[in-house]
Length: 82
Figure (spheres, one colour):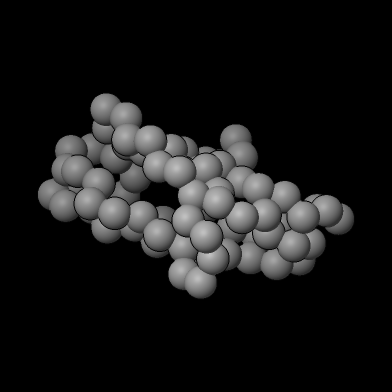
């Protein structure tokens, strides 16, 4: 997640996938956020604000899930790069 705004802010990722299960999620080197697993996906709410121009990488481990997510959004904006 890259913060392109002029203010520090938190962020939310919604990730949906076919099959499988979420094992864990994490962001390295910062306080962890809150994960809520849903049927077919998860929602991750950041544990720390990202400074303007800064970025963080949300990492996750899935088992037995498809390689490409059905849906991925960060703050309601569709993810790219899959």
